[in-house]
Length: 274
Image (tube, rainbow, N blue to C red):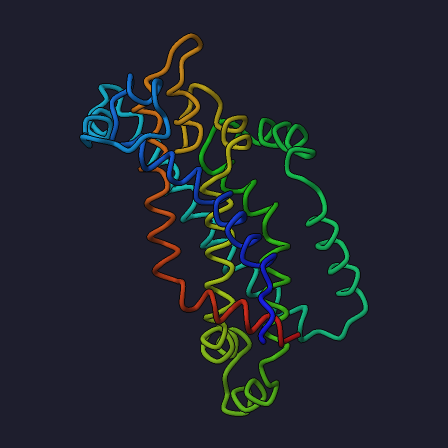
């Protein structure tokens, strides 16, 4: 008789519930009136209403649209610059045999161990001196400086799995170093690129404390700080808050689904290469 292993299904249900319950609460309360949310937050939205979403999209101050625009600009610029710099630096570290590149690798590894909140105050001093404090370029530069070590390690691990003979053959055909990298190596790094774009895109999109401090209260808001600022000190429209959270997740969810196939390849490939 086959022995039934009951702990694993129970654990799977518990873990699934941990992730499913918050999602259910958000989805259910998006389509309920504010008084129903406060009275029965876990009940089904019967009858459902789109008033909360309409209220967020038509706010007089345009909080959602301003926050969405700033988040898109910051996230897109940050991940594009990070992808280019990380891929090129990762290629150099993977192919270079010089001793000082090991020191650079250790420095980058140390950068991964430092939480961004630890260096936030010194960074704000640097941005203030350079005139980039409370600006979108300042926030983008902060993201690039902090997250580039992660991208470098992902790309360098994949590049070590690319045969060197491909690059040598391109060099024999007359291609220079940049042409070898962009025309031969980089097209082979699509899974790694998707992994870097998704990880860094989600991290930067969901970042709260860094844009709150760097942009400041009067110079703009991102989607996460917009949710924070939609809550008053003494009162809050719960329906609008849940609707704003729901709308804030849609862009990054669509972005993930668009790159999901390459992202899965990147995870499985990174486990066997390097």
